[in-house]
Image (cartoon, rainbow, N blue to C red; front, side, top):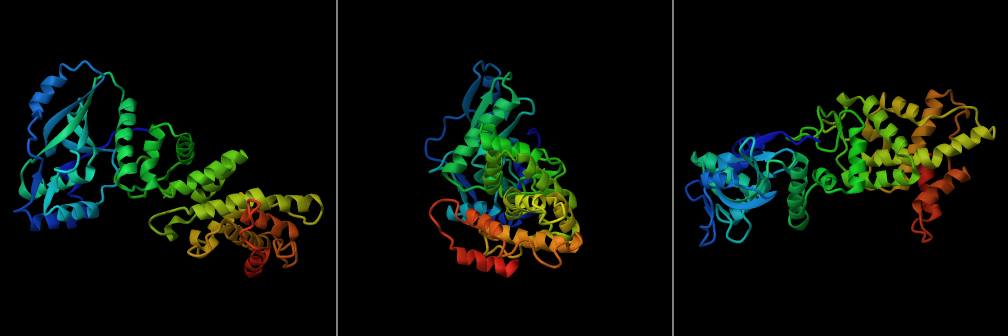
Length: 394
């Protein structure tokens, strides 16, 4: 993955989403300040740092440097979603100041090629400094910890180091979106995260980030699955079943077939939908195959063809309907079965004369749903509840 794009801190806070922060800072510009503990004098100037770095022989050295905010940038792959509301909350909480008296100073990585300093820790407080600098027209200075690598250290090694610094902070202090964490988990060698990233990247234009995210890691993203934690669970099931290819085919078919102009601008593919379709392929399609072998039905069913047909007509939310209360996998499996029933009647010549293949009298179907609803010996969903739900949809 190529982490190359950067944006200056001063430019980041000029984006429209920071308008409210800039307004708050402007209203209090006369009292806005940057505070440090007494005795914070043991730092290098920018020129002192550059002189010492020119003689650095160690692989990695950390310096305390007072940097102009104009030299600080945010680098793609090291940037979390800097949230303006966090900046405003901190600015007001500390009485219109950026207060380093009881917290760490920003940590930045030095890029000797561009002579930029890429912030990897304290990204929100750095953005506040940038907002004050823009409001005052001054190139304010910030005391930072600069991590500088020997020039022979690769970009990949630096990215891993950055992920370590970044990820330790977000795990320990601020909550973060799971889609933000994915590339850092990959950099740190998390096997499931690596496999999930490979799955995403195997499908052109599919991303795990929001479509309009300012620092896209996938070129020209057209559709997204941001529920990364849920995708990890689904992928782990597919890996255990040796059916990753089936999961990929389902996602690819949806990406290719959905009429995206009719969908919401977020272009989000529901993980609930993917799970329902995957569970159908694994648990219910074999029932159709077995019935054909036994001579009970006279048609071939292909899940991908069903997906392509359905989403050429309907939208993503219509497949499962409301999932605000009906969130259980077994419920979604029943809804998928209902859609397949409709497909068989609508598109396959109604081979069962108006009857649903999946119905409450189909014991193998009911047993398959019950097995999903109660995966362990401890029964949590009664059979009567399952049958009632089946009768409502099938």
